[in-house]
Length: 103
Image (tube, rainbow, N blue to C red):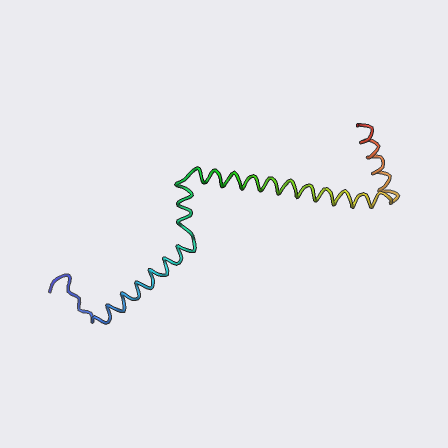
């Protein structure tokens, strides 16, 4: 008997081949979902990675600036409502006098 001879039934071999093909299809689907091609391409093309990181940094910076502007605007509006209150209004009025004096 040679080393290449198989004692198994041919139908069992077909079943194993089908099982291995199904498993390979599952692995290919998982790799497509992970987008490994995009990740490898990203590391092999540094210019593309630099541009991507630059635009991401710009968008984060712009978002942070706009977000800060909105939050401070809302806070200023809320504080302007409380200026009419006796205790808080006095302190905010004094603060406003110091700011006006500095100008």
